[in-house]
Each structure stands twice: as C-alpha cells, then as structure tokens.
Length: 346
Ligand code: NAD
Ligand code: 89V
Image 1 (cartoon, rainbow, N blue to C red):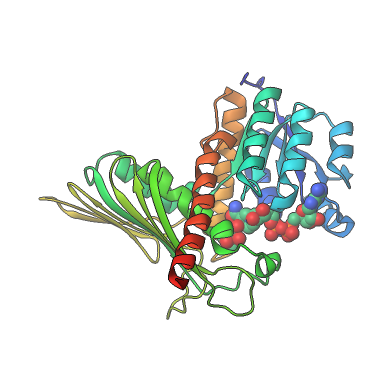
Image 2 (cartoon, protein in one colour; image 1 turned 90 degrees about the horizontal axis):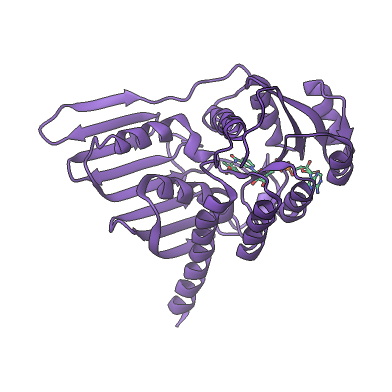
C-alpha cells in the first residue's frame, strides 16, 4: 500500500457503543491522528460520545459519513453483523479501515472483505488486540530471543467467572459465545506465539443455564513446527481470586520453561541458568479502570501500530488477510466441537 504523507491523519469512528469508548480514549492519546467525525445508528449513543470527546461532526449512517467527510481511515467498532456492509462501504469510498473482532459472520464474508479491500487498494486491519497486551508482548519477546530454546508444548488459558453480560448483553443471547467472542483472541495469541496450526480438535460446553451459547471450550492443536498447544477458555470458573481479563501462558522449550502466571508475573527458567521472575504489568492509563486496564492498554498499542502502518504503507500484523487464519481456526473449532458432541451421543 502507498505510504501516507507526513501530516495529521483524519479518522472517523463508526459505532459509539460500549467498547468504542476505549478506542476514543486511545485515539486521543496517540500523536498525529484526529478522530474528526463519529457515526452511530443510535442517536443517543452518538450524542453521548460526541459530547464526551468534543467531536461535533456526527452522522447516523456510514453512507452519510463517507459521502460528507474526507478521511484517511474509518475505525469500525460495531458488532459483527454489520462488518461486511461497513467494510464494503469503506472500500468503495477508497478509505482504509479497521474492523473490530470477530471479523465476520462466516469464512465467506471474511474472504469477501479481504478481497474487496485488496481490489480497492485500501488497508484493512482487524482490531485483534489481545496480542498487543503488555504481558503477551513480553512473552513473545522472550520466546523470540530464544530464552527457552525451541518450544515443544504450550498452553494459553483464560478462565474466569466475570460478568461480561452486564456490559455486553448481546453475548448472553448469541448462539455462539465464548469461542467467537473471547476464544478468538486466545487462538490468535497461540498463533502469534507458536505459529500456524495444522490440526485442531475441540470440545465445548454450556455451564451457565441463563445464556444461549457455550461458555467453556478446550482446543488441542498441533502446529506446523510440530509442537502441540492447548487453548482453554471458560466464563464458568469460580476462582478464589477473579483473574479477568488475564490470559495465562505455559510454554515448555528445549532449553527451559516460561510461565505467565496470575498477577502479571512472568517466570523464565533456563537449563543451567538462573530463574528470572519479571513483573509484566500493563500500564494504567489515566482514563482506564482496573481490571480492564490490560485490554485498554492493548487498544492504544494496536491503534498506534495502525498509524505506523498507514504512514509507512506496511501491512498490519493483524491485517484482514492475517486474520483469515485466526478465523479459520475458530470455524474449525466449532466444527470439531459439533462433531465431538455428535460422537459422544453415539
Ligand atoms: P455495542 O452494541 O455496545 O456497540 C455497537 C454500536 O454500534 C451501537 O451503538 C450500535 O448502535 C452501533 N451500530 C451497529 N451497527 C451500526 C451501523 N451499521 N452503523 C452505525 N452504527 C452501528 O457493542 P460493543 O460491546 O461495543 O462491541 C462492539 C464490537 O467490539 C463487537 O464486535 C465486540 O466483539 C467488540 N469488542 C472487542 C473487544 C476487544 O477487546 N477487542 C472488547 C469488547 C468488545
Ligand atoms: O474482547 C472482547 O470481545 C470482550 C471480552 C474481553 C470481555 O471478552 O468481549
């Protein structure tokens, strides 16, 4: 993609709901970029965000926004059912776009969005932010520098009983829940740390009787390197100390082991070497709140990365194209879980 000239970038946010507030705070904190306009189909939400962030150019539809504004990018922070439509509109208007996760409702839609943006010559990034969390980046750096040799086994784990439904009520009524909403992040972390996946087997369960989708999922994967990994997620796990939204990691390598434990503590143990224990806490931005600060900081990091990519014309780490691999694993996990449940019934 061509690099953008060195001037302030002009962005617009589409979708001013629950999570978009974090996007707006993060944009405010990033140098060289302005969110010049807002769009939401819900007038009350639009007005509330406009007042809160002092952005007075507002639109009730993406069509109106793209007609009226001259933009370098749009940041789409709506729920999944609108993504295909909104990404297609942005591509037609030749405007680069960020699209929140989950990217699409189907693999076909995901591929269509990637192809449409490629044909239009516009950059597309999926807002897959968990790999941009400070503790995950610290783990990635330790592995990349060969601190534990060649990894041969890994576990990426998210277990909680946090009430996500109060902030995001649609999660309780969605037929697909934990894998589509949260597991997709954890799968992406496994890809980012351990490389691409060659085989996958999954099982899922619904423990909470008041929701429609699965709230527990376990995946066993083999990677093209030959290593195995386990991805496990639960929103039904009652621990003495709630860990939301921490992802815990275990990696065994040829030269040592790495553990990312609760409380943002990373331990790296090397054969014949000292054991290193490091605090890898995320920063608490002035606008952030615990325990969300880990996720909130990752929003700053991924949005800053987007600005760097737009300026240099290089593909984002979680480009639409890259995210097809994460999305394919999500689809494979649901297919495997359905097949496993069928075989249990027999
Ligand atoms: P939300 O329902 O609170 O907000 C979505 C907003 O988009 C609403 O205000 C709605 O009116 C607006 N909207 C929907 N369709 C629109 C359209 N076509 N045009 C204009 N406005 C439209 O949802 P949310 O909880 O903020 O989630 C939004 C997305 O963010 C979801 O995809 C969710 O999975 C994702 N999310 C990501 C993270 C993360 O860490 N990456 C965390 C939470 C939510
Ligand atoms: O990332 C998400 O989409 C959120 C949460 C972290 C709460 O699962 O829904």
